[in-house]
Amino acid sequence: MKTVDPQRHAERMAHKQKIMHERIAKADKEQGVLLVLTGPGKGKSSSGFGMLARALGHGMQVGVVQFIKGAFSTGEEAFFRQLPGVEYHVMGEGYTWDTQDRERDIQTAEAAWEVARRMLADPSFDMVLLDELNIALKNGYLDLDRVLDDLQARPALQHAIVTGRHAPDALIELADTVTEMKVVKHAFKDQGVRAQKGVEL
Image (cartoon, rainbow, N blue to C red; front, side, top):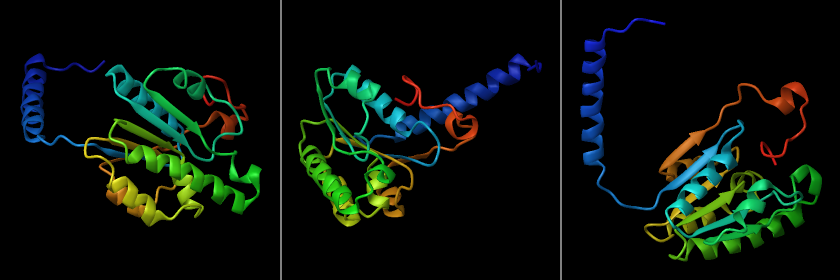
């Protein structure tokens, strides 16, 4: 292990502490945040549901609309649906390569967006998770401008989380926080390990 001079370490940490305190003091806005979780790596939905759990820990009211997913049950649905303060909708019918019916996929996505719009217009929801919305947008199932308008018009203190790979540039531009997940290794793609309960399901 590298030897670090305690005095130099303390000085560096004191300098860093000063910078962080200054940043915190300047961050005086109170507003709802739009978060986008995208990229090819695993963990986009998991991160969104982690924030949902955090919000519930603070006694907040949350809503979930799942696009695309729906052909199989997940641990998130089984867990969150039973909790007070959660309104949960699984609106998809499975992956696009399974449904193989574009018109039906469009109708399903539009029905899901109507549920999402209601939540985004309702100030009683403190946080709304729109899981895999980016896939519906990438495939052209929903009008992007309409989605952006609804996200922008939501109540001032409401947080919204959008997940899914291929987030549109316009959504990234509108968002307050964007995280892109990167693949380093993946058990399914690299080793042929099927989706596991508690990890993917």
